[in-house]
Length: 200
Image 1 (cartoon, rainbow, N blue to C red):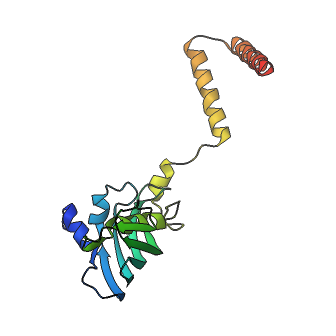
Image 2 (cartoon, helix red, strand yellow):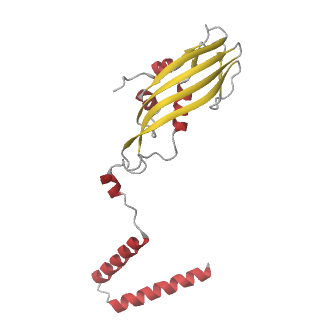
């Protein structure tokens, strides 16, 4: 179980102290664990282990960060609803502008005040992992829980028609409606439906 971190500790864990660095290339590495996903109360990711590598090009007015993320996360399988492991691979670039006034963070660009000493990458790393996930998250073929799959068998049109006919027969028996009357009711229902369709 990962240790419980406060939000401030997490922000420090995923921050780069850029202020005292010389202009040029600098590299940083981060380890991501389940505490990051718990902090964002993620509905998509239950747990995970990822390595983050950042190559940062520093100048006086901006930082250009090339970010690579590799690892895996635990999600709910869309097919059987059991936990499944999804690989994570992400490569992106974040431009950090050191200036006042600040602009709005948009996932590709970030602004920090010249007085700030750290660049906090917590949100960027979390969003990048979520965005890297496939739309459909499932086990590889043959690895889903067969008992769970059996509970989610999709009914065919024939299955639905047979169930409806059985319900009609049970209702007729319960209310004492004979077979002839059931046929008349069915014919009346069809007539009413046809009339409704013509009006539409």
